[in-house]
Amino acid sequence: MATMERRDHVRRLIAAGGVHTQAELVAALATRGIDVTQATISRDLTGLGVVRVVRGVRGGRHTYLLPDDRTDGTGAAQARLRRLLGDLPLEIAEAAPLVVLRTSPGAANAIASSIDLSQWGDVVGTIAGDDTIFVACTDAAAMRRFRSRLEGILAEVETPMSVRAGGEA
Image 1 (cartoon, rainbow, N blue to C red):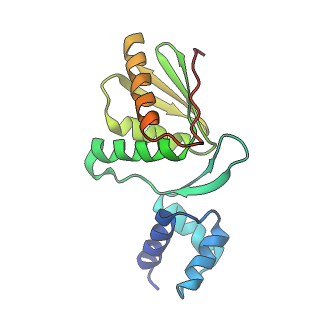
Image 2 (cartoon, rainbow, N blue to C red; image 1 turned 135 degrees about the horizontal axis):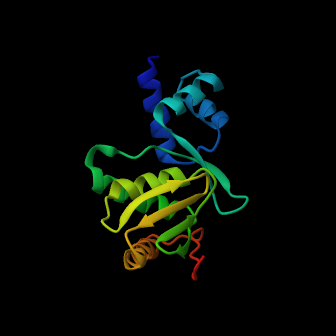
């Protein structure tokens, strides 16, 4: 089977959810008649830009996230941000003019990228580590608007895993 065809199967399995490890991907592909090794799956995940994150702040289960569709700058990025915030926990703190976001290990880059691509005027840029994001805002008022916007999204997509911290850092 061609690489692109196999990767399309991998992409669809991840999008459907329920696949948490490379071994599960190998097994799911085998049920479709596609025999691959873990090493091949590892290369496919890297080639697809898939990231593995932990759902839940501590001791959560690993899951895979597909890269965002960058074809339409803001619309796709904002839709992806909504999906991410619905799936991942988020704690918000202020350190003017920064907003500090804490999420699951491995998820910070995906969230920061979606914030950057959303092109919100109040945001100058982001810096992401493994589970922490610094969002630089233009000033303290912009910081409050950004935080309010994020909290609005969290309220729309609230899940049992979402955590919202009040207060300042």
